[in-house]
Amino acid sequence: MFAATPNPTNLNRRMERTLAIIKPDAVAAGHAGKIIDRILAEGFAIRAMKLVQLTRAEAEGFYAVHAARPFFGELTTFMSSAPCIPLVLEREGAVATWREVIGATNPADAAEGTIRKQFATSMGENAVHGSDSPANGVKEGRYFFPEHVIVANGADVIDA
Image (cartoon, rainbow, N blue to C red; front, side, top):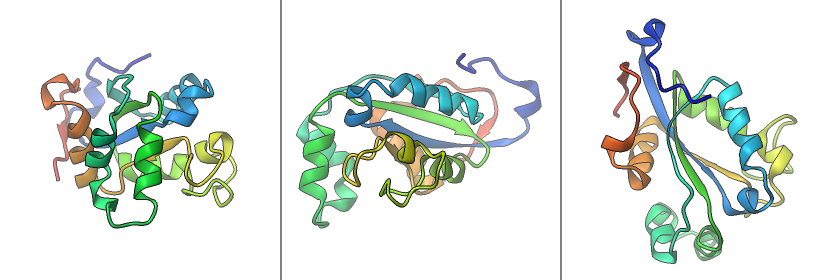
């Protein structure tokens, strides 16, 4: 169930946001529901979510920080190849917790029980995205969702 109602015990805590993306490979393989179940089981509140088909230009814009890297073309082609599901997740320590839950970029190196170990097929098609810092969590979330559509819980959100 979505945690849209404020939890009075969290109102004085500073929450952190991260962007998660269920990537095209995981959506096409029918794993989105299982990944969402895992997100909720790990104590994240989903504050925004949608199914989108990125254009190549949108994928290039999102991953612009990697434009000079050799994998940029392959990554943006993949991310614009089929629908994906971006989500704004919120909880204390959201970025570090989400990165722990998803595991290493290369599923061969990912720990047992992580999402990438369970659902990823390769380093390029690795099922999910996770922000690498609280500042990027906010910035990346805003790439897909204007602030007014992100459901707040009444707690202060770290806006790095």
